[in-house]
Image (cartoon, rainbow, N blue to C red; front, side, top):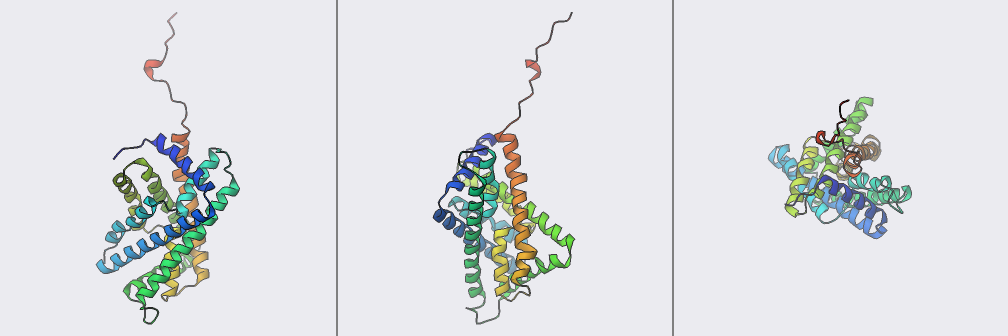
Length: 279
């Protein structure tokens, strides 16, 4: 499990951001679509485990399997590109500009949403026997999650929206730490171990992840949740996307770039200080 030093993986972060800016539209959409679909399936898996065991910790312990799969297969989440792509601009890589960054973010958002919606439709079919029965316990749980994390925030007013935003910031603090942690090792086992820890933290604490929510809320609406598409976008998805951007770029990308990619001059060691002769 070879360890990669912070200076080395900081350089990898900038290179990854640059590569994503120049990636073709087809590849960007395919990779984003598959990332959204796999992460949504992992969310459905974790909720199923939680409902069947009655223990949310077990669901949280198992949820990172989806994140590990999509990362190892080279797929892209919006939360990850929020952190990595701006670093290519900050580092002034040739050809990397705001237009390219926004293009990447837009394509990844569309791809993630399409993938998550595909899984949402599939899971709704499964838990309603092809829309012929009322949702089972798993479907009811998903519907209640959607209600609490849209109308619940709205009912709390400004305090609710502040809570939503902070949860979104802290979510991508952890999720992007998982993205970067995977660069700390050159072995598959090392990458998985490093990714698992921060993803477990975010899921168990109930932080707001824009791509997970692309599955939870549309499927919740289809399964009879008492909230609307407008509630979903206004009281969750849009603030969550903004919070995810702030959290990933500031607490992960910006911090690592500032201290490991562009290090400040070191102070001289005491032994290196030249003493002037006494007069």
